[in-house]
Structure formats: C-alpha cells, structure tokens
Amino acid sequence: MIAILKPGVTDKQRENLCDWFRSMGLEVHVSQGQFHCIIGLIGDTSKVDISLLESLSIVESVKRISEPFKNANRKFHAQDSVIDVGGGLRIGGGHFEVIAGPCSVESEEQMVGVGRRILAAGGRLLRGGAFKPRTSPYDFQGLHGEGLGILSRAKAMTGQPIVTEIMNINDLPLFEDVDVIQVGARNMQNFDLLKELGRTRKPVLIKRGLANTLKELLMSAEYVMAGGNENVILCERGIRTFETYTRNTLDLSAIPVLHELTHLPVIADPSHGTGKASLVLPMALAAVAAGADGLMIEVHPDPEHALSDGAQSLTPDQFDDLMARVSKVREAVLS
Image 1 (cartoon, rainbow, N blue to C red):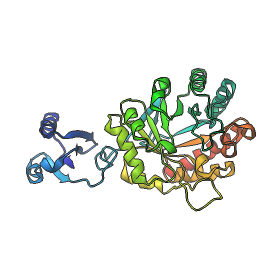
Image 2: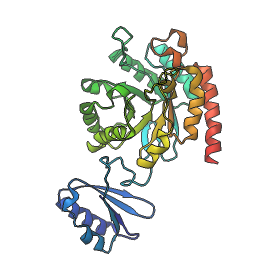
Image 3: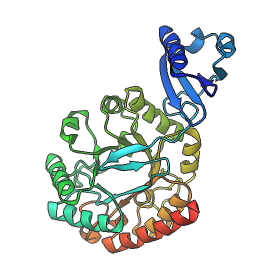
Image 4: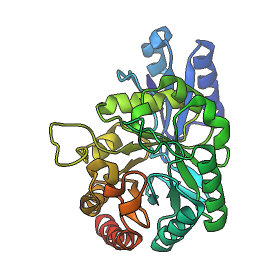
C-alpha cells in the first residue's frame, strides 16, 4: 500500500503519520519527490482503514499495491534511484557508466594494462572474475583469493572502482575492497546469498538468470532490499531461447519494461547476451538507445588466448571504438 501526501505537508505531520503506521507493525518507506511525498507500507496492511486514511487532511490518495516486490517498485519510489558505485561515480537517474574488463582475472599485468586502456577510453569501472562459475568442472575456475588481491592492486594503480562476482556466502569477508558485488545469472535465485548481501551496504549488481522472468529478477532485488541494502543495480545479460546462433538472446525490451516497473538502475551486458565479439558493438548501441543506465563489456588484451570467454571479448582497440560510438548515441538520445 502507498499513501501519497499533499504538497506542503510538514516534517512533523509526516513523521506522526509514519509513527502511526509503525504502531501497527508496518515497515515504512518514505520517498520524497519534488512535489509529493510517497509513503510505502510493507507488511499486513489489512489493519489499515483506507477510508480513515483517505479522510486525513494531509493525504491526497491511497493505493494498494498488488505486486509482491515492494521496495523495488516504482510506485513506492517515483524518482529514479542513483547508486554510488565508488570513487565518486554514480549509476542511475541520468548517470551512465561503463563497466569493462576481462571475464577472468589472469594476472596483475593483464588487469592493470587493460584497466588503463579502458579508463583512457572512458570506462571508469573495472571488472574481472576472481571466482568463475563454469558449466564444465574442467574449465578455468578463477584465481579466487589471489584474483581478488590482483583486482585490489589494479584498483590502487588505476583508480578505478572494481566489480567482481561472488559465488559463496563464506567468501564475503574477502570482498572488503570490492566496490560493486556482482551476483551472476546462476546465483540470481540463491536466496541465502541475497539475504546476506542485504545485510551489507555495498552496491549489488544482479544479473538476470538465463531462464528467469523480469518479475523473478525484481524479487531477487527485493531479497537484498528487504535486508536494508537499497543499493541494487539490475543487469540484462540475455536469456535462453530456441535460437542457437547467439550464446543467449539479449532481451532489450527488458530495459524499458524494468524502468516502468522499478526505480532501480538497469544496465546491459551485450557480451554475455550475444557471445560473439562482432555483435557486442551493435547490441551495446541498441541498449543505450533503449535507455540503459550503463553497460558491462568484456575486454581482453589477447582474446584468442583468454582463459575464459575469449570469443565474446573485445580488444582494447575495439573498446575504444565502442566507447566513441556509445557517446554519440547517448548525445542523440538525450538531445
């Protein structure tokens, strides 16, 4: 349920109303917009007398929310959320950032070198996998703690906030220096992990599962937000369909749909979405045109010899070209 207050309501009036809601055992979420204040109520709202609430002089209207995702719902929070991702950088609400780097952390030389090239092109966040969930148990699984150490040193040398994936709750203490914790597609519904991330205050980037609906993605975000962590970023990275030419089918319609449903930032990952380096550029540009708040791009200095996902990785030179074109598309969309 949400209560929309009339313009001009004082802080004291609003707080008295919130205290009344809390006395009924309800969780209260206040969203202050430019003209209206929206109070979202989470819990058993059957205790609330809607007629009484609507009769209050400070209340403009009351609406029941049928969707199970409350914290992530745009009806609760009309303004776009802006997430601080470290180093003074923000994503959402008109703030656009590109996260780029190799699929897997392989060496310090690799991460620092590619990080500097990415930064020079305008990619201000550095990504790299220290823990790699692989379909085959015989594939490279990542450098684990050593990989996180390499990422930290690369961060110190390039100044870029770092983004990397977590797979196990027990590894969370190792992520102290990580700026954005990524939840991969395979872990999107690892609810114990999501609950634990809800107890942190670090930004959490949740990738859509390859067979999951948008509602299920939003419910995963809800798990994190219900724990008190509202710093959530959503990522469309492609879903599995009957098409086999591409690795996945990048669902670009998810971007505007999610923007209608939620206030959370939405980014796109055309690297995993297509699985082919030649398709990353056109799909990245399409994602920007569709309203994405950012991109996640895989970049490797030598894709042919990458330990994972070389086929979908751009070279630094290709990334330079992508960033120049992304800038032009953003200018056209925003003009």
